[in-house]
Image (cartoon, rainbow, N blue to C red; front, side, top):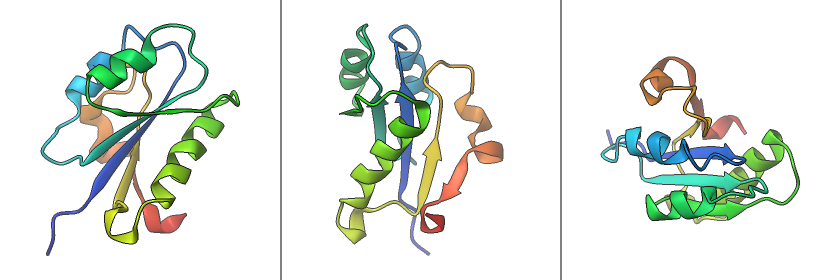
Length: 112
């Protein structure tokens, strides 16, 4: 059995003060890519996410769902071998703890 490929999508809007905390909590040994979808932030959210090693996408169309869809479109454009087995959605405001992920946030990509 192979180790699953796991990606995390984090939609953000003005989360400069919390996105670094969220990214620091994600276990690097089991997540291959963290995708932060910047939804028109007017602060330094994107810069903080980039500095923490995340892939940053820009979604000018407002809305949590639009930001999530931007991340999913990015993943779908990857070669099949690089697409995740598991896709996790997290909030960028640090209200949802990464330790909650096994209970609430795993989604099989094949469902979409």
